Figure: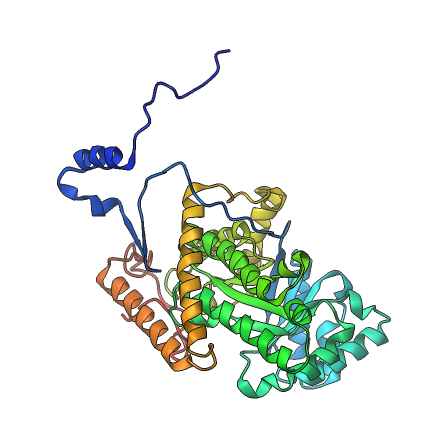
Length: 432
């Protein structure tokens, strides 16, 4: 067999390529093939042959996470068991646990030593750790083998003083992450990837800095951090976002003289975008969630929560939970994503996106730090996010950004099953 080669194709430079492209485009103009990325940079469909390759340490596989919310502790337990029987291996209990008995009810029949357990906005944050310890002792479970986390809505200034106490409480739970950085909040308010990345870096840095002043070693803080992201609909951009964050966070940790293993400590949890869910044409939400989940997995998320398709109008059912769970099963059991390595590495397009996001996000992060950190410049930062939200909403209203089922290809015969909570931030304009 003859050896394949490309010697017959002449090597051309950028100027020659652009001249040929301009001839083909005719009156259309060169700008029609350029992508003005919303994050502040421009990409062209030109492969130079040289590009940056980002080395990241992504997990071998990911946890199939599902969040359950019931009207009672018993109902929450029932939903959790259904999710586990359906193949989930990480459960987020989004329930206000008010007593140790309620915790026992929620965990009844669940082999917590084999799954990842998360308490989402439990309110009794400090007491739940004691209750969880007691539960492990009652069941004769090794607390050091437990995995999961406790995610509060956000960390305020006043809570920083309590963090050393929290860390002491969780000393028997090395696998329990209690320091959430809720980047999803920035996404759900309309922020772009550069806003998310800069916020995550600054908030993570702030936690390390504040706890170090209180006598907590940086290596302990990094082991307790969990970065909670949302995954948007820009498929390649989202892959690059997670890759960029792992690289950027490792860069931040270099300043603390941590060893190589400690610098690689970075737990990313992500959920499909609430900002980009619609209460119209729910099946489009399933399609969006599929590509969003793929982006998260390829980008290197540690755990993924696919939000049910009916979440936007508060009409979740067991069927919608099953459909959202099976999106991950299809990617794992039929598409073998968990057996693939770092498939994005070396891809010219994704590497270019990653490099640009790294550069722009780092510049933004340094600007935040010059202003005293994220806690000192919150109003300025939220102003920038608000501007990004307005720009996105305008592009949707004008039709320059297509949202299938909302501003194009609408199902005119569909009846909305419920009204969207007006207090919920949604990115899509859904006014009739």
